Image (cartoon, rainbow, N blue to C red; front, side, top):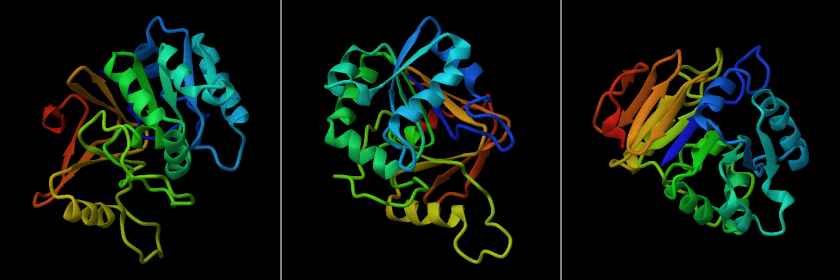
Length: 233
């Protein structure tokens, strides 16, 4: 199993996919074509999404093909050398992947050893469920259960505080609700500019900010890059 699970595509003030492109290139190695799942796009077209990703992947000499370009997306996944799933709305992404049979197909390809890259919503669907996404449920998927190729939940774009003047729940309070309802699960608060790399059963955390890990009945803990996170796997 080989996974690169990225919190966000773009850091504030930077170009799209600029900060993780070096990590993506290193992860891909000799792979020169990827199958891209653009279904998290809602306010712009799948074609435009592919073009946007391709513009950055041109820098590393990698061709991007969208699943929507194929008459049979499952066959495209079966033949893919790498699968990439972009961010956007996690509910829209999940619904379309479920309808096309891609949840199972991509899971099987990951189990077979092909590399998988996801950012934001694309990282959410690698988890057991999408229950720790930050997105609004604008459509209803068949289920909240997704690929489950990692045994813990990710909360991408994790923030410590609410904006000034906002009296609603903090991100931490929302996660505390989740772990109260799901006491056996860990949740990894993945801050901006950070990612996980999985090679087999080995999990590495990469990034300039610490990771915040939640588990019911335990005080949340912070971990820095290089620390042992084997308990999550």
